[in-house]
Structure formats: structure tokens, C-alpha cells
Image 1 (tube, rainbow, N blue to C red):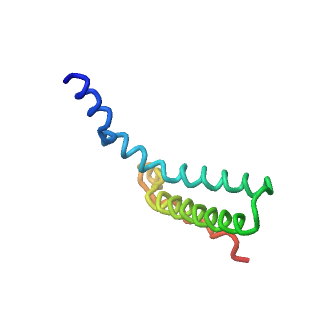
Image 2 (image 1 turned 135 degrees about the horizontal axis):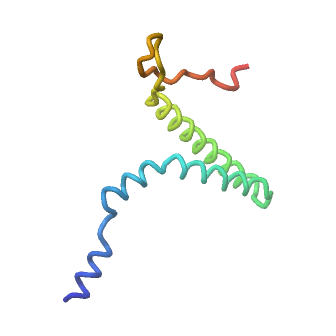
Image 3 (image 1 turned 90 degrees about the horizontal axis):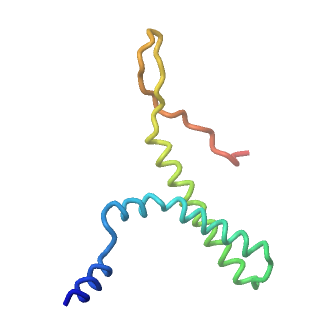
Length: 101
């Protein structure tokens, strides 16, 4: 019976702390996916159809990366000193979007 208990405990879902770590790793997962796709496309061993599917998947993953970055940037506050030397928080300055030529 003891071995059954061990087997069932190994089949448990991840602990809450592991799950939260995994969820916060979304950006890294998408970025890794993009890097892998770029490597596959650069190798040139895919058919045109396979390349197109990989390209579209890569663009989708990259858009998710930008979305996550924008969400995180909106949550960041800067700690600065005001004119009297008191510490205050200010929103992180928004950066201009790239590629709007």
C-alpha cells in the first residue's frame, strides 16, 4: 500500500508555487518558440508550406511576447524624488511604438 501512496503522490498536479512560476514563464516560452522557429527557417530545410506555417506561428508567438511586455510595462512604477526630496512613484514612461515610419 505504501508504494501506491508514493505513486499517487508523484502524479499530483504541481504545487501552487510551481504553477505560478510556470504561468509567469509564458514570455520565456513564447520567446524560446520564436528563437526555435527562426533557427528552423534559417536552416532552409523546410518546404515552402512548412516555412509559411512556421512563420505564421512565429509571428503569433512574437505578438504574444509584445503583449506580455506591454502588460508588465504598464504595471511598473518608478521610484523618484520630488522637488522636496520625498520619494514618490511615477508611472513608467511609455515608449514610442517601433515601425511606425
